[in-house]
Image (cartoon, rainbow, N blue to C red; front, top):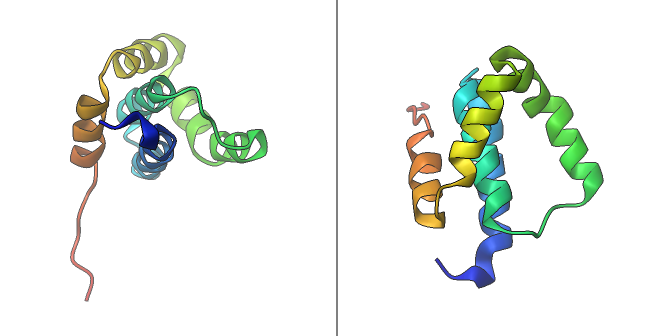
Length: 98
């Protein structure tokens, strides 16, 4: 994975983590959050990060519990970029819309 695009990788994976949160897939939220944060030191504006946390990640964190969240987050942080992309794409739920 080209490190020039690491900031985009962070945003994309965090976005898919937010979608996983909407489906109450809390372990995936934690895993993708860890993967995104480990992908690059580049972060969005702190106000945006806080808003995402308030809207999506805090609830998933609370539902999952601290220990399980930290375990899944650490597992995500240990992934390389290609593995993180695979898990992020696998988390997408495609549905037909008429």
